[in-house]
Length: 62
Image (tube, rainbow, N blue to C red; front, side, top):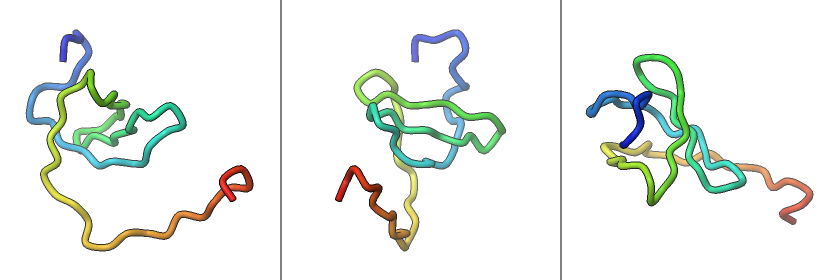
């Protein structure tokens, strides 16, 4: 990342979802959070949950 406030390389976190503009909110294991922008930020998937939660549809998505 070309950002003075970016976390150090190797910082891990948990994906919290995807927002309505397509960025991915991440809760860092060291505290704090940030949004990852695909195509701009460099990320690596290192694990995944074994189950998925059902996400209810909002009225606009039905």
